[in-house]
Length: 120
Image 1 (cartoon, helix red, strand yellow):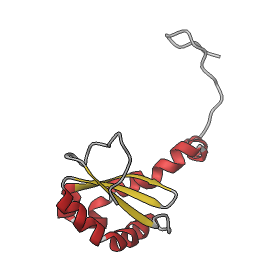
Image 2 (cartoon, rainbow, N blue to C red; image 1 turned 135 degrees about the vertical axis):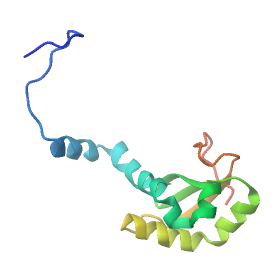
Image 3 (cartoon, rainbow, N blue to C red; image 1 turned 180 degrees about the horizontal axis):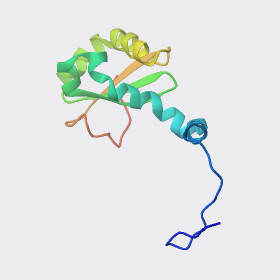
Image 4 (tube, one colour; image 1 turned 90 degrees about the horizontal axis):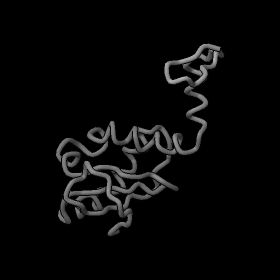
């Protein structure tokens, strides 16, 4: 075993990147975060350019997609489009992960809210 500059021993076991990623993906917290990450990355595809500027997905758990929007007016629009948003989100994810959409208003949708309650 070789020593690194910080004096901790380094394992000489060689693992392929695929094996490492499989191990990470099997961890529940990481696996749960993948769908919301995919939604965030493809949010414009789900809601369109204009709505993507004023909204953001913040959490997907137990079939409930939590969104944050900048104003209550945009919140009303998102609520009106909730079934379309769920359908398009599921298309992007390739599964039926989204069963319900909940909306909350916050000034900056890019910032994840601390309070995860919803108005809907």
